[in-house]
Length: 438
Image 1 (cartoon, rainbow, N blue to C red):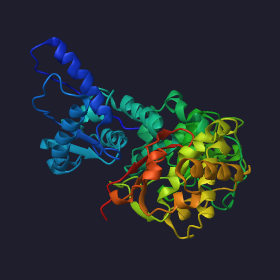
Image 2: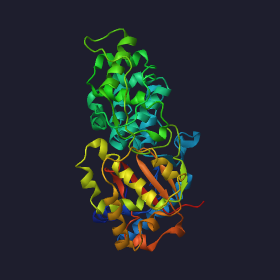
Image 3: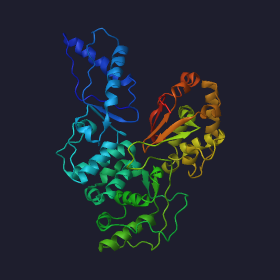
């Protein structure tokens, strides 16, 4: 889903009715204009559309907006570049990047006082204290991208030695949005050896927080997820973490050992095992400025998503336990790759290779998607999938980039390349771009 906002809109008109009518047309233009801002957050200081006759059509408003934005966009500089303070336009790699940077700056006593921050951080005020700001960042990031973004936030603060600042400010309500993603169930997954306890590096400030929270607190479970994912490649951060009770108890044991304040009756096994379900491939490294774009022969894989939606997959997922539902769509996509005979070393094949095995049959969804592809686009599933493209993955987005010449009218008529936007059942926002030049 594309988010576009105007901080201040100014019309100069002879009649008040013309201004009201112009506002309606401008709002429609904001929704329909092709601005090329699908994967970045672009902030423009001022955009002048020039003189517009009162009776001009909505299409003309959209065209004029596209022209003005096209002029401003080449002048946009990255938000942290030295010229950003005086630049007419700046960009962030994604819409969640401002909140990650805000937390980093506040934790290290740096200001966010450039002109673009009020627009980039809607709902935050510079007068907010540090604790309130860090909590607000957690709530916003959990709403934007769920568990993976909060893990990225923890990783960035930990790299600055400032994770304890967040932990001391955190309240259970701040993590309410991701609580279903951190469960105490034990799925069928391979656990690491008992000889490699995950909490050996628990710091004293973190330990003191855990000792005060206790075993059942969502903050304890979230911190366990933070420590368990520390050794992972950032592209493998999970959407759901399933913890065994022994794992959380081990975190509590480490905290009581390091803090010297053991709560009564909370003695865990000495060498716990833990299980973590990695349900989908995820994103670029936390400090990456722009998501890596990797070549794939299966760029049409995500055209299958609207077919699966029409086949009823989202409703079926709602009937499954969360730990199964979050992995199943990606397992179906992996099966599509196998059906299309995509090479094992292809980017998407590698990303989906380590998914856990499915507990439910997947063939019905492959068959349903193939039938719909034949009926709607006169293409079988293999023909639909085999399309060269670049793909970029972040914790919240899948962006697929095709050359303009690779647009297929059969796919366009079937509306399979219309941006699906945010898909809760996939855990990603999906967008297709026909602007690839390399």
